[in-house]
Each structure stands twice: as C-alpha cells, then as structure tokens.
Image (tube, rainbow, N blue to C red; front, side):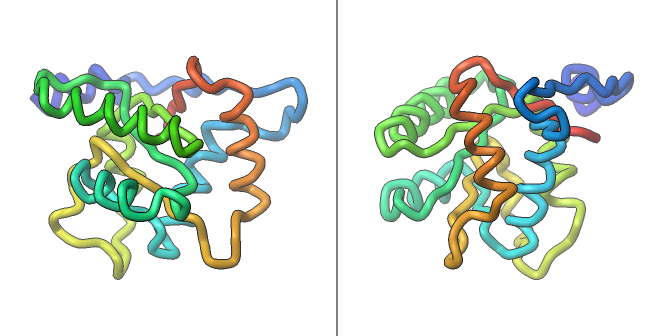
Length: 161
C-alpha cells in the first residue's frame, strides 16, 4: 500500500516540475507554499484533521488564512462528502482553498520536523488549515495567497520533496 502511494505521489522519480509566473519569475509558488507551511507550523498555526478543521472552520472562519486538501481521493464516501462541504464552506467565507498533489509529501512536510505543537493524533492530513497570525499575514503569505487568487480552480501545488 505504501509503495503504491509512493508511486501515486511521484516519490520514486521525483521531478522538479515547478510552475512559475511571468509577473514575478523569482516566485515559485510550490516552494513558497512549502515555506509558508513550515513557518506556520513552526509558530503553531497549523491544524490537521478533518473533524478538527471542520470545527475550527465552523467556530471561527475569520481566523483561517487557508485550507489545504490533497487531490488524492479516498474511496470513503463520507470523507468525500465532508471535503465537498468544507470546500463550499471555504468558498462561502472567502477562505483560500489550496489543493496539493500528495498526502504523503504533505505529511513529510508537516510531521517530520518534530515541533512542540505536534501531537500523535495529528496524522490525519485529509484537511489542514493555517490560521492567521495575531500580527497579520506575512509578506510571503500575502504573495502566495495573491497567486492562488489568480488561479482559483486549476492550481494544484506540487510540494517539493
């Protein structure tokens, strides 16, 4: 199963396919996503888990900067329905919805660097939210979110390995 997931996620033959934008060639959206996520995780602003994220989105959507979900589809109809509802909720509250190419790479990005905020139950990465910092969005976060707004439906972030 793990080997199959690795193949699906492209971990055996990782290519450095990146999407750059002509407006700012120095801005690689995939690497920027990685940096934004690492900074947010380091500051304890990342929440993982479908049910935990749904609760935060319901209680305080104004404090959520973005919602991250993998494009991989599980064969669980209930999870799929919850993803659809969370996507609709994010659109309704104008929360940036970011799709990523692989759950396994998201797990490597968020769970391998052990932080004080990490709990053993935080391995459900079918939905991840990043909350807005008390001091507001950083310049890097604003740039990333602006790029996402220009490509709202067709952008899938390929997390660099």
